[in-house]
Length: 250
Image (cartoon, rainbow, N blue to C red; front, side, top):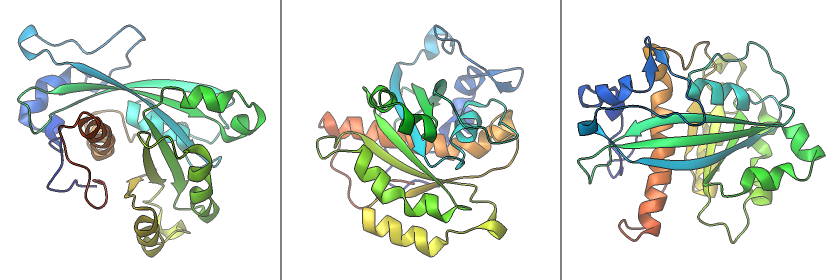
């Protein structure tokens, strides 16, 4: 999931020596720190960084791993078994990154809104709540469930209207490491990317995918890719970056 040469953010910066103080600010005893609603990473005044907040709605067919993905990105325990999310679960993740055009890092505050597929279909008010003031929608499919992949175009058309161009669409394939059980091929993904003009991100299913420093390294490319797309969108809207050429960074 390496980015292109034109990335607006430095990929992998947080895990580099320069990013060490910022990495330490989101860890506690070498594990990801869980932040309360009014808490945020604490840094020395000389290293203070602006906080940029985004809301991301996570959707997809039941069982594709929405809750497990958010847990991995937040560094919290991944549920051992699938249980349908009954309502909306909101999770906050802090992720420092370094814009290429600035000497000053940025701390991204990501609010992930996860809602069970069954609940969305049953309660009409949940979808508007999830989409209200959202900056991005993460459309998930599982590499082990072909129907979840085939349903994506219709799901994306239903949830993103023609007047919502600034809503960043992100497609994430989960369980890509279970190659022996794969129902979706790389050729399928390549065709999908070419048709919709979207690069598919990948997330594994391994245990402990987000906890300590080792787990952090596994989810860092995905978090880097998410904040890169959101930051690039804002730079384009502000008129300080050109429109994307070709596919977005992976």
